[in-house]
Every structure is written in C-alpha cells, then in structure tokens.
Image (cartoon, rainbow, N blue to C red; front, side, top):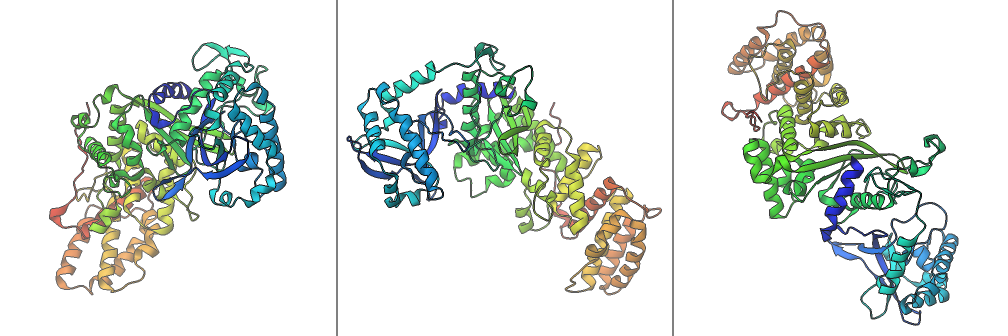
Amino acid sequence: MILRALFDLYARLQEEPEYDVAPLGRSYQKVTFVVVINRDGSLFEIQDARQPRNGRLVPRHVLVPGTTKPSGSGLNPCFMWDSPGYLLGWDPASPVRARRTFEAFRQRHLAVEGEINATEFSAVCRFLQGWDPERAQDLAILEQLGAGFGVFQIRGETCFVHDHPAVAAWWDQQVRGGEPGPQGQCLVTGETTPIARLHPKIKGVAGPQASGATLAGFNAPAYWSYGLEQSFNAPVGEDAAHRYTTALNAILDGPKRGKHRLVVGGTTVAFWTERPTPTEDIFLAFAAEGSAAVTSGDVQDEITRAKLAAFLKALRQGREAYGEMEKDPAGTVFFIVGFARPTPARVSVRFFHRGSLAELLANLRRHHRDIAIERRYGESAKRADPEFPPAWFLLHETAGVGGDIPSILPAKFLESVVTGGLYPAGLFSAVMRRLAANRVVNYARACVLKGYLVRNLKKEVPVSLDLSRTEPAYRLGRLFAALEKTQQEAIENIKSTIRERFYAAASATPVAVFPRLLRTYQHHLGKLDTAYKINREKLVQEILAPLAEIPAYLGMAEQALFALGYYHQMNAFFTKKDSRPVDTISERSEA
C-alpha cells in the first residue's frame, strides 16, 4: 500500500516542477561549489554555488547523474559530481584518504573518455590528469563552504559539464543499457520486470544517518527466504523502486518538505493528498502549531493564513463549513505515514493511513472535542494554552527528567488522532506519572486526561466546572482546590502550599489525608475576612454534601477525575461568572 501510494505520487510530482522530481538515473543533490575550468583543463576558480535564503546561504539543488551518494568506507566515486575529497582531494579530517578518493574519481572518468565524444568532458579529464591535491590547501573558499557536493563547469558557459548533450546521452545509455537485474513480478505494479537489487536510500527521516537509510532491504542471511537475498525478498522493479524513493525523498528532503514533513518526538510524519489541495498546503502547519498557527510569526503568507482560518472554521462548525476548505472533501484521498529509525541503516514504518479528507476532518473534530477543556484564566495563560493544541504540546507532558518523550508514544498518538482510534494507554499513564511527580495540573495535562476518560473509558467529562457532578473523585479534587485556595488567601507569600506536600497522597489515598487537611482548613478559614469566610465555607459544604464518606483509595481513572475536578475548581476561582468558556467545537452530528 505504501509503495503503491508513493509510486502514484511520483506521477503527480512530475507535473509540478517546484518539487524537483528527478527522472530515472538522476537525482537532485545539494551542491555548494562549482569547479570552473578553462577549455585546456586548467583551473579558473572554485565558485560558491550556495544561494541566499532567509538571511543565510543554503546549497543549490542541482540535477546530477546517478542517485544518492553510495555509503560505506570503500571508494565509491560518483559521475561528474561528488564531495571535495573526490573532486579535489581535499579533506582536512583525513588527507590520506582524500588522495585515494581523488585518484578513484580520476580513474573512473579517464576510463570512459574514449566513449564520450565531447570536448567539454575531455577538458574535465585534462583537469583531473593535471590536478595536484596539495594545491587544494591554498583554496581558502573550501573552508567556508562546509558540507556539500561540487560539479564541473567550463568557463564562459552557463550549463554544467554533465548537462552537455553528448555527456547526458552517454549517461542515459548507461542507465538503459546497464546489466538488468533478474526478472520477476514487481509487487508494486504486478508487471514482470527487472527487479532492483538495492533500493535508493531515503533521506529526511529524523535520525543519526544524514546520508539516508533503506525502507526495503535485507542485509543479513537471517532475513532471507526461499533462497532470495537482499531486496529480492520483496521484489520491486527497478523503475518502481526509483519512482517510490524519488517521490518520498521529494516530500521529505526536497524544496517543498516544509508542507509535507513534520517531526514529532522521534517520529517523522509525511503527509500528502492524491492531488494538490488547500489541506495539503496547511495541514502540517496546523499539526505543528495548532490554532496558534493562524497568528504565528512563522506563517507570513496571507494566502496560507486564510487557508488555516478556513481549516479552523471547518473544525469548529463541521460539514457545513467543509466546502469553504475543499471542493470535494469526501472524494479527495489523503495519505499519512509515520517513520522511525531504530537502527542507523534502516527506516521503519510506525503507521500508515489512507482515507478521505472528510474523514480526516471528522476525526480531527472528534479529537479536539474529546480533549476540549477550558483554558486557564487570564490573557497570558490563554495565549500559552491554544484552543486546538498541537501534538507536541500534549506529548511534551510525557517527557521525563531528561526531557525525552517515550519513543513509541508520538506515532501511536498521531495514529489515534488521524484514525479516530483509542488514545495510547502509555500517554495517559505517562502524564499521570509526571503529575504525581511534580503535582502540577496544567492545561495540557488536563486535555490528555479528559481525552482518555472520554474516548477510552467512555466517561462524560465536562469542559468546565460541573456543580452537579457527584462522583467522589471529582468532588475531592474540587475540595482540594478549595482548601489550597483558602491556605493561599490566609498566608501571604506562601512558598509551599498543600499541593506541593499532599497532592499525590490526596489523589490516591484520600482518607489518609483529607481529615488532616480539613482540620488545617479551619485554622486558615479563621484568618479570612467575614465575607470571604462565609462564601468559602458555603463552597466547601456544597462540595462535601453528596459525600457519604471519604474513599480509602482511588484508581487511576478516578485520580484523573480528581485532577480535572481540581483544575476546574481552581480555574473557577479566577473566572468571572459571565465569562464561562463554551465548547468551541459544535456537538452537532456529523451524519
């Protein structure tokens, strides 16, 4: 399914020049320098090929012969392009190896000079014959360029040497006339065709290997079956392998990666639609920043802002607003895939989903309705608490002391949001652990707890304070907030409240804590002014009224309800009665 979707995406991207989709036998590479030579093969200059973008210099994407740079410690020169070590014999970190790489590059090109009838290619060969790698030490510009590749150009010409018709024709002949792999049925197209022995590498997946990694491959006998080795275990035709890897690299590592690629935790997400759509343009910006994307300084294009505003309107109002976002949301297919890299050389798929944009919008609406809870009081808090929180905002609450999000959670959580499935239990348990550790019930944690109770446990949880709710856990959470607020009002500039000392015990074993807290409360109550004292006592008695007894123990779900009761009641202390929040997502049926 994934390979077929990417195979089809290649055909679409070929029609859109801004994606830099390469034809078979070629690839786009990040070029930082150009070796400009005279027609006699002497060096004219090393030219900086980088281009300014957003106040800095970035490599130029150039179409070159061949695919990705081969990895490994062996000598693997490319044709007419490569790193400074191969082109010039310059590598300060390993000067001995640089001489060997340059020699391998020189021999590869001199060996085919007789087959290529082009004076421009012969000029490159003369340069390689006469070049001494020691001279590269005098080229100060190489120190400034950093990582990147280089290509050749003849002085006074506008095209690169590898683009000259005779050179390009020779390369195309090598691609078409190379020794084909064994014949087999391609699992992508179903056709009998030469099968690719190795698939090109995938770039742009977050991980330690910048040179890329393989999506389909078998690198040890333990993975072989029926006498088939390497990628022959999963037979993909050479053309299909080129198409699916090229399309995936275009959206993960190409010039348009910003609207197709998002990294959440250790998961790299790729998103696209079967045809160009407004949702494709802004979905990942919304996923990265939530509702804050509309006012974010990162989004400066007014057209994009308008698309984001229409997307938010569709989430708030439902199907009647879908038409303002998409012409045919029910008939337009989207694809989303999550990648992780557990090993340096292998890309693994965490999840893959295909569906209609109408389904995607409905599931996003459901997600935000499930987690919807009132934001903290105050303008500064509301700016920090987005109406539609992004995934990282919620996942951040699972991070441990080292700041690392559990590796399996981002993919599982994103999949549940997109498909409408259950939230991962690990998300809930991780937030509960962090809550017990630092005793802070903030907006993000309240969203996670409410969402899990509503979706996974089928409980009804209000958006804001519910005075009619009688569950002991919710009541005790409200009571704990009232006791803490009384303590704060009775003791000015208090450094440590009952929350810091007793929250974990009060939410887990309330009968062991609340009798003591209620006795202390009476002492704090006596320090308040009469009006405050009366109002506070009325509130505490109203909370306690339905409770026949204080429970000895609260389970995990009840502890979550305790936290939400505390959050609601504490927020109510700072919220005016006429400014109670409302659920911004319509509860109307999607039918």
